[in-house]
Length: 116
Length: 144
Image 1: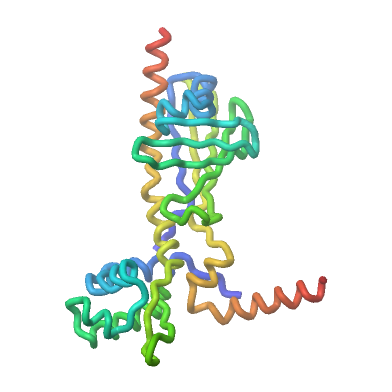
Image 2: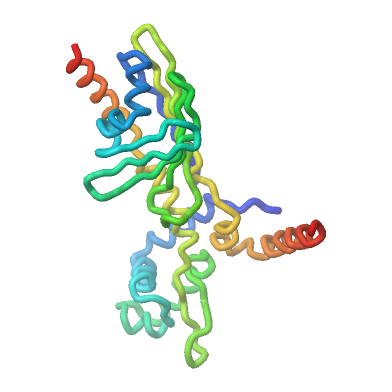
């Protein structure tokens, strides 16, 4: 079985988020829920054609899922799983043990001075 | 792009291991430098928590207690949903030195993906997973 590539998943998320139009589409799906390409074109200052192109890329990246909507229009729904992979990447960057270990040293210094 | 799975730091501390151990493993110690409030049940499987003024809470599970050398716990990965089972493992190792203590902290597990996330996060591999899961179901059926 080919091993799922966690780095590849995270990279696709960061590539997707690097483009302001795709960020706007993802933000709209996050705040407003599933929407068709036409809905998104009405709400965002992006052409219908550009939205279709971005949605295709986001679908391949696994960030949105196409599903059947009303009147046989395709609706797009945000898929959070790849976002969570990117979140794990960011969580490692945000742990900040350097600051914490400095705080530990400061605490031990204060405590030693206090008891001396 | 390398995915950061493991964080490791070593620091030299000018205090004996017993002091460092107390700072790492008691509510009083943890609340003085790590959280703003803390509680800990210091035994493997025991629970611990820290709270901050921001309202953030960290729930931990104590895993290793080998006083005064090794203290390990697991906790939630920040930013993932509360019900997500993924946790990172944090282990502190204390070595006595002439000057005090050499403290090493290792936190690992950021790059883990449970089976459910593999299926949904990796769309390109859906087919592979579907057949793997089919085999699992067959295996379980045969074993039943």
